[in-house]
Image (cartoon, rainbow, N blue to C red):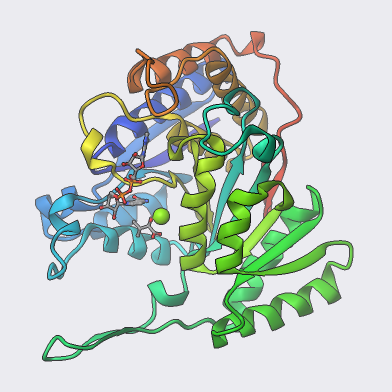
Amino acid sequence: MEYKIALLSGDGIGPEVAKQAVNVLESVGKAFGHTFTFEEGLVGAIAIDKTGNPLPDETIKICLRGDAVLFGAIGDPKYDTNPDAKVRPEQGLLKLRKSLGLYTNVRPVKAYPTLLDKSPLKRNRIEGADMLIYRELTGGIYFGEKHLSEDGKQASDLCSYSEEEISRIARMAFEAAKLRRKKVTLVDKANVLETSRLWRRVVTKIAKEEYPQIELDFLFVDNAAMQMILDPRQFDVILTENMFGDIISDEASVIGGSIGLLASASVGDEHGLFEPIHGSYPQAKGKNIANPIASILSAALLLDYLGLNEEGNAVREAVDIALANGVVTSDLDEHSTYGTKAVGDYISVLIQSAEELVVNLNHQNISLGQSTII
Ligand SMILES: NC(=O)c1ccc[n+]([C@@H]2O[C@H](COP(=O)([O-])OP(=O)(O)OC[C@H]3O[C@@H](n4cnc5c(N)ncnc54)[C@H](O)[C@@H]3O)[C@@H](O)[C@H]2O)c1
Ligand SMILES: CC(C)[C@H](C(=O)O)[C@@H](O)C(=O)O
Ligand SMILES: [Mg+2]
């Protein structure tokens, strides 16, 4: 089969890590007899530099005509340090999520058996941790009305959610839990926020009426932040709103040992975008030190989204082998001599001999509406 991928590499380490994901997809193509073609689009700071717009219309068109979007990262220190900038790289990513209707962001988190001693958390607390974070992606405080008073002394960001925005991601989270350990934890701040109380009412009703076999429990986000590092094994599927999901998923990356391992799938009813959860890590730009695995595992989720589950599994299996053999960047091993490219090449070469890879069927299924992500 032939697949058209929109490639939005972005800023900082984005192009370096996305390149490794592209190489991996090309290896998958060779090993399994598919053709992946890539159409590149501008996004983020580089798009502002070249066009004045962090998400040019042409980029949206490229995404709309692709079968899926592979995204690197965006962001640049010249904007991070300037609160007065009116046009910002992040606006490009947020507008893209909204334009493509990507309301559900899935962030798989696990403790890799071969990396248990790489996490700053104690081995006996993280061993066996395996969760999916379902983060709402197109609503909440990120997208509410913003206001800055004329004298610049008062500002507000509105947090708003509708029943529909909550129920559509909630059903996806419950479907995912059905294929796993059958538990959903709703993370909110219902002791303070009206939006969180709406989340509780809507999610509780769906659980009772449609998913009686799934255990639903609740945690306030402050407690959830503590439980995440105190006892991460208690979590199966976490369901949460946009900003809480952003924060607890970076925290959760400590369990695996590095944020450079955490991939994500952003999906809606019609489109899918796949990106690492980390940012443009500007300090590492051009140094060949960034971990490419988050990007490569995002490509694996993209393969699942296209219905290529065996291919996705082959990528995950190759990543597991690289990790087990110590072929990792310096974020996971300070003495490592492997750079971004070497880790990517190692994984690509393994995939090209895919028939020798024992495809590990223990990888968990993640249900995403019509498609199944493993
Ligand atoms: N989806 C995105 O594109 C995205 C996500 C988060 C942040 N950002 C943007 O990125 C810029 C930098 O933000 P930040 O420093 O807060 O977050 P960041 O994720 O870029 O980096 C934070 C830290 O995580 C580690 N890290 C991140 N990616 C890594 C990788 N691949 N390999 C090894 N270590 C890695 C590094 O220690 C780094 O200092 C900002 O402009 C921010 O807005 C973009
Ligand atoms: C860059 C930023 C807009 C983005 C977010 O907050 O969603 C990032 O932190 C992420 O996690 O993808
Ligand atoms: Mg984030």
